[in-house]
Amino acid sequence: MADRLLTRFLTHPGNRPAVVDLNGTVWTFDEVLGRALTLTQQLRATTDVTGRVVLLRTGPGPLFSVADLAVLLAGGVPAVLPDLPHDQLAALWPVVQPAVVLDTVGDGAPAAVAGHARTPVLTVDERSTRPGGTPAQWRTAAHRLAGRRLEQTATIVFTSGTTGVPRAVALTEAALVHGTDTWTAQWTGRPVRTLSYLPVSHIAQRIMGHTLMCLYGTTVIASTPARLEQDLCQHQADTLLGVPQVWARLAAACQQPGDSGQRLRQALAQVRTAVNGAAALDRTVADTLHQHTGLRICGAYGATETTVPAFHQDDATTPGLGRPVGVDHRIDDDGQLLLRGPHVAAGYVEQWPRLSAVTDADGWLHTGDLVRTVEDASGGLCLTGRIGSAFKTGAGEMLHPEPIEAHLLTHPAVDAACLLGPGLPRAVALVSAPTTADWLPDRVAALEGELFHGIETARREGELPYCDLEAVHVLPDRWPDLLLVTSTGKPRRDLITVHYSHLLPTLETTRATHALI
Image 1: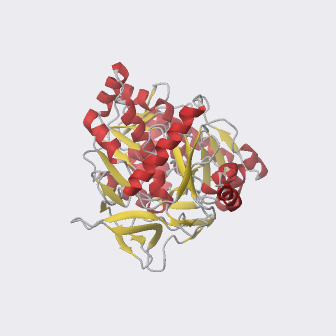
Image 2: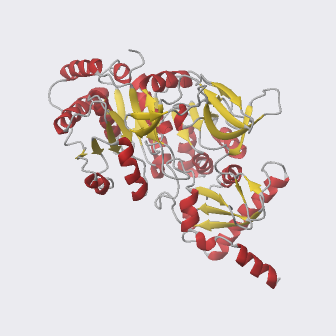
Image 3: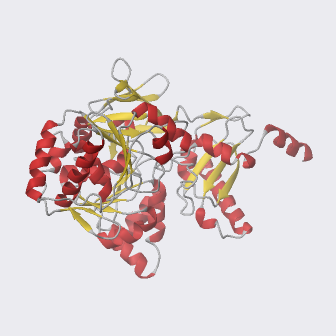
C-alpha cells in the first residue's frame, strides 16, 4: 500500500502543519483530514462518485487539499479545472462526464456549463466543511475508506491546450507516488516547506503544492504570483518551483537596495531545492541569483503525459535536459524525443472511463519535442523546438518559436511572449508587459527596440536560431486575464493570433510598404 496517497497521508502526525492559508492560518494534518471527511459525507449524500470524475474549481490553499482528499476518500477521481474559455470548458464535459463539481473559489465560473449538463455543484468553504467528532475517529474512518478504495487513477490532469481544446490525461496513483519518490530522490534533501502560488491544474504545481504534503509531510504555503516575494520572506520556504519569468523577476527584486532586497536575499538563501520548468533558464538570471543569494536552480523536463519530470538537471543553466529519471529514451528519424517507463500516463480520456493509449504499440510516448545530442562530453540531449509549433513564414522560412520566446522572457518587464508567423511575410513577436500600462509611447518604443536588438544580437552570437523578425510589439495586457496563456504561461497561439490580428503584417500591407520605399 506504499503507492497509495491516502495511506502515506495518514502516516503523518495529526498536529503537524499541513497547509498555511493566505491569511497565515496553519491547518494541521488532522484539520485537513477532518474537513475532507466532512466533504466526503456531503459528496456521498449528493451522488455515488465511486469510480467517477469529480471536477474541482480551486486554487492553491488548504481547501484544494481538502477537496482532493475528499474525492479520493469517496472513491472518486479528482480533476482540477483549468482557466479556459467557455467553449473549451463545455467541450471537456462530455469527455470526463463529471458526477459533481466542487467549487472552493465561489466565482460561479463553471456554473453555466454545469447547469446545462445538470451536474451538481457544491460550494466548499471553511464553514461548510467544519468537522464533528475527534481526530482519533477521523483517522479510523479514513483508514477504513482508504482500504475500500479500488480506483487506481489518482487524478485527471488537462493538458495546456496551446493549440486547441486540452486533452484529459489519466494518471495512476502508482505512477504519481513512485514517480514523485524517484524525482525527489534527485534533490539535495526532503522538502520541508514549499510555496504554492501557480495554478494547481498543472501537474507540476499539483505535485509541489499537494503531493509533497501527502507523501512527505511537507508544509504547503499558499500564495499568489502577486504575493510571491512577500510570502517567501515571511515563511522561509526551502523548496520552490518556478518558470523563467519568475526567476527573472526574483533576480531583479533581490538586487533592490534597502530592507526589501535584503529580506528577499535572505529568504532565497534558505531555499535548498529550486526547480525551473516550462522553458530554458537564462544563464544571466541564474548567475545573478547565485551571486546575491547562493541559490542554485535545478532543471526539470517533463509533460503531463510523463506524470513527473522525465529528466533532471542539477544546474538548469547547463546545456541539455540533464539525466533521465526512471525512463528509457531514444530519438526517432524525425529528431523527436521518445520516452518509455513506468511513470507514463495511463491514457487519454476519450469518454470516462474509456481511455486511449498515450504511447505507441511498443510503449513509446511521442513527446512532440525535437532534440539533438549535446556536442560535449556529457552526450546529453538538447531541445531544439516542438513539432506542433514550428511554422513557415510567407517567405518560406521555417522557424521554431520556443527559443525566441524563452529569450524574451528573460527581461524582467516581460510576463509572457509569443512569436507568430505562419503565413505572415515575416515573424512578429508579441509580449505581455503589464508594468508598461502607464508608460509614455517613447518609453514603450524604446523597450520594443531593446527587445528586438537583443534577439538580433543573440542570433548573431549563435545563442539563438535564425529568426526573420519584423518587429516586437509590447502590450500592456495581462494575458492570463484574457486566457491567452496556459497555467504555466505558455502562449495559446491561435487565440493570440485572433486577438491581436490588427498588429500582424499581411502580404498585402508588406507589398504596399515596399512599393512606397
